[in-house]
Length: 48
Image 1 (cartoon, rainbow, N blue to C red):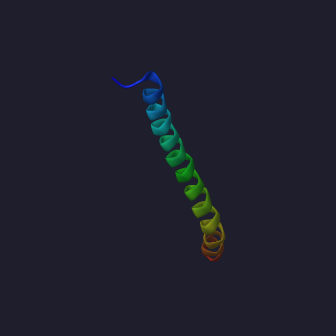
Image 2: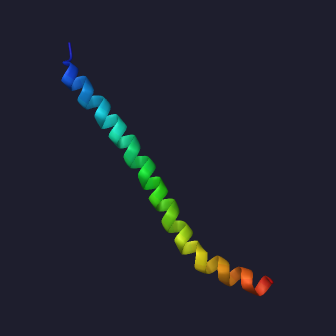
Image 3: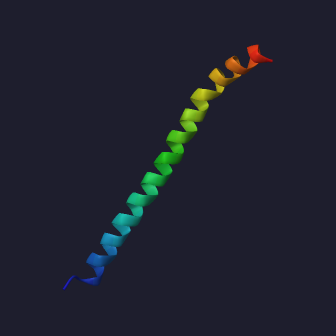
């Protein structure tokens, strides 16, 4: 039988991994939007 501490560490590891993936995806999305903003402004200005 696994100890309660071992099970708790396992769940903390899984939850920490999910949080890291979610935070990382938001950071990647934010940096991509930052890179896209100057290009979009340049593309949209000539169209107007």
